[in-house]
Image 1 (cartoon, one colour):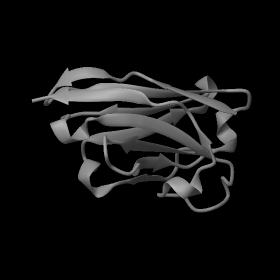
Image 2 (tube, rainbow, N blue to C red; image 1 turned 60 degrees about the vertical axis):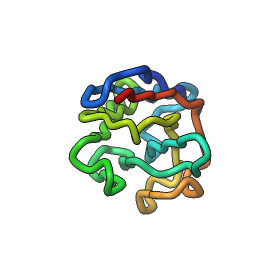
Image 3 (cartoon, rainbow, N blue to C red; image 1 turned 180 degrees about the vertical axis):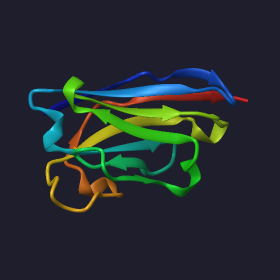
Amino acid sequence: VQLQASGGGLVQAGGSLRLSCAASGRTLSFYNIGWFRQAPGKEREFVAGINWNGATTRYEDSVKGRFTISRDNTRNTAFLNINGLRPEDTAVYYCAADGNKAGILQMTAGGYHIWGQGTQVTVSS
């Protein structure tokens, strides 16, 4: 499967964005999906994850209540809705896939083996 993230942009603090992760080559339902972000000079960090059928989600503590991960397997697309954006949310956001969908929902980059290119999110204060 190949992944392509999109939907980033420049927004003011307090604004919202909806990031999309479109899959091609294989149906997305074979995979658990994670969203990560990487700010300049920092390590890539887990933001949110969703299992293959959407029944289970996980979030990094700082984004709980502001970020919502979802997926539509019929559209082969996963989403990350971001509300209440803060300047510290500025980063390149990546989606990733884990083919071990029967396993636990991974919350580290090492748990995902397929990565899309990132989409830049910039939040101005």
